[in-house]
Image (cartoon, rainbow, N blue to C red; front, side, top):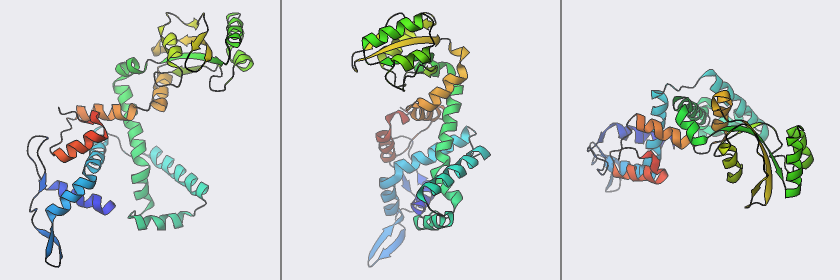
Length: 295
């Protein structure tokens, strides 16, 4: 795969491009033979078209993403190296493999060293996380408007009676976490103070009431989630995001499943990502239409 990637990169350097997305890219000297079998020539153009059809879009997107990391100043740092080494050693331990044996096996997959392995399997994830963090800080106001973070405590009960008793208890000043242990039916909502966002697992009806209250405090009524048959007691401890900004950012970075795509799309647009080949265009569009930012 690494060899294929290298060939495709080399081909990309000699692309002949038209100035619109519905064109088809080619290579110079496309009819020049690379391989001969009997009386049949396999040309540069043949190889390029096969590679483009099989992995052109994914390879182009990988190369583009790596370029975005560079443009945004995201590089492998000491923390990433230490993290990769730690996760690598943990993986070896769990699989009961020796490092030298693992490295030897990598070579059969075209990976020549442990550092090459880290470059392919660890660092891309870490760089994307760094890009996400940069995006959240660059677009903080917009991000907070999207994820609507709120800090609070939640108790989940299996019956309305339990929830009503719990509500009375916290309204009378009893500790929320202790009340959750007494009346709650799940450790998921233990009464501990947490930040909740639009992508939290909290039922939408509960989250909506948390974000719609006018001030901090215990919500005066038990909230019923009709889809699950569960009942909730909620205390909003802080609505003003400026007072828990760091916690809000960390929760968004750790919880959101859409942030990778959102951040990548933002920086693709910022750096005027343009595709000049219809096959690559369609391939990337089928992967994620939001990556198409040139229309």
